[in-house]
Length: 285
Length: 169
Image (cartoon, rainbow over all chains, first blue to last red; front, top):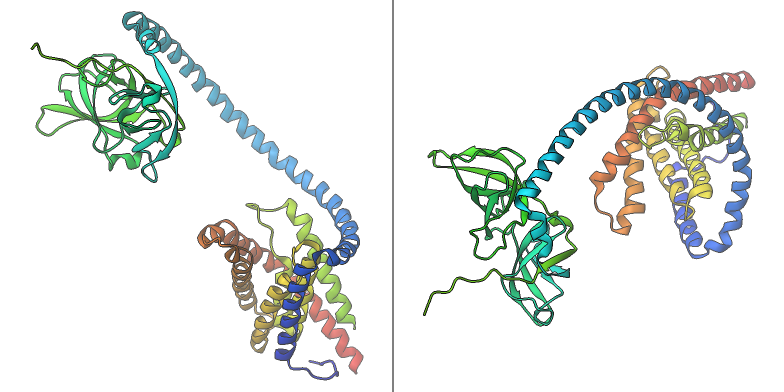
């Protein structure tokens, strides 16, 4: 092959020279970026008309492709949407049935009434103890705002935990997903009682455990668990969560299940504290 | 002289395609790196000197149109071109496997150097994320495109060499 008959430079030397040049350029352009901008603009002025030209051609070709591609896509989507309409209308029917059922339950229990009646104080979560999920966290209301130990803490849709320690203007809340937490619960539909316990291992999957369910309890996945009437610290009828994965223990004595908390503990910013403590049972003197 | 003009045109066309048309045909938000293919191909065909010069000017072009600092892309492309020049010793006109592998490896080196210079120095340590999200798709797409582009470049080059030989005699 013919080589150009200039002075034959060693490629290694060119490489080193140009590398140094690059490094100098980097420093110069970093240090004097304003002075370099006219150069960039000049290059841009040359390049951009060409880009514009190619772009118009490219876009028209691409548009044709796009039309063809979207056609089959639309057909597919149409099919899918039809199926979705079917399932949705079916779901809608089921939901309507549920709604009637709910109305009846509300009449029976008047639970929502009770829920709204408790006096509440809003507070903000100001620090959390654990890294991933909140277990024990601090809120910005304390004794000054009428908070006392053993008051129940709720958030939007359900039970969060219980006040464990109260300061002047802060208090600590132990949440129900904490490993040492035990809450006496009850199935809203069947009134069977159970114990909801926080579990560090199960929490990996976003659930906590439910124990000591009566073997004869007629329960199914998705049933609501609320705080029970026999609890000595939790007020009655606060939603805890929904159960799943019901199993019978090996001794055939009880059922256990998982519970998905109604509260999203990962995104807990504001909580409500019910400023009413369940009255302690006191013996006669 | 002719080669210089043809190479310049090649570089500019590839640059324009890469920045415009292929943006429309991007797969998984990545665009094939045509300039890298040109750099590797010329290094493979004509050795280190041409590889590093082509790389340098490709990089400079990118630098001037996109870079925050000028010289970084130039360095990366030049680096790739220079080291691919070593493979010139085993250059064979009809062999497609070696250049394709070279382009794949170069693409990885390009990704790695870019990651180190642009991201690692800013303290972004999650290289696996960047590799799966950007590096790997770009490698696959570029290698795929290179099958055609390399063939084309070889044809042009063969033609050029033919003309040059005629001029000599």
